[in-house]
Length: 217
Image (cartoon, rainbow, N blue to C red; front, side):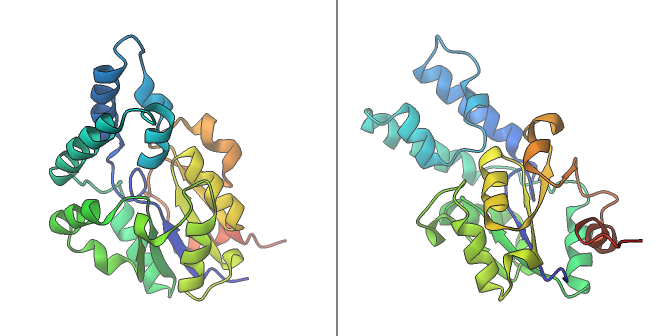
């Protein structure tokens, strides 16, 4: 087998945005559930739809207000790359590996990303957003669609994720799973991954391929 494609989630995988989201959702949860502590940790990795269904299904006004505040928040977010990401993905592409972004973020959020980091479009052959899917992670739909658009079989692909739902999505698709311990502790995500990394420093095409397709001696 040959590594033909690498697919990446966005938050906590390409950009170190999770602390910002924890701050936003911490404030929102305290606004609506002042007697419950730490709800922002319970929702890590969930899509906006999943959060709304779990906590605000019967409060339509809250949904409207939260979405408005979230859009305003994401408009002004700081998008800092995970350490080592840029040279790593450039190395993959130099070795002929196709790349895709597979994110639950919507078009409005991505407009903010492109405004802040226009070069991100050059890192990926395909960019799939929330509007591209009918099922949310942990469904494998998004990764299977990404692989198909790149013209690759899932077993020829590697997926990079940080959340539990995202890791399950990659695993269910049949891809090799690399987990980033940017959102959850290494020990927590380890059972869902074949490799765990803190960032991309020290990782390159050769070391990744050797991990995915070890040579029997």
